[in-house]
Image (tube, rainbow, N blue to C red; front, side, top):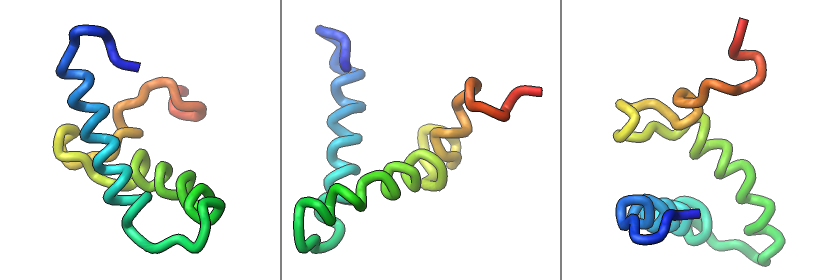
Length: 73
């Protein structure tokens, strides 16, 4: 969700939608909607855990989380 009258957050989600379309939805030909839907969870895992993001200094988003199970001693 984005906050009303907050174009900064709207721009971020629009950019994510573009990345989602380019990296998952239209990156390859899918024979069916079911095949495309099955490809989404692995792509989201790659995006959040392995794909580097320039805004995060070349690190994946998961590195910014502090509440992941097993990350606290």
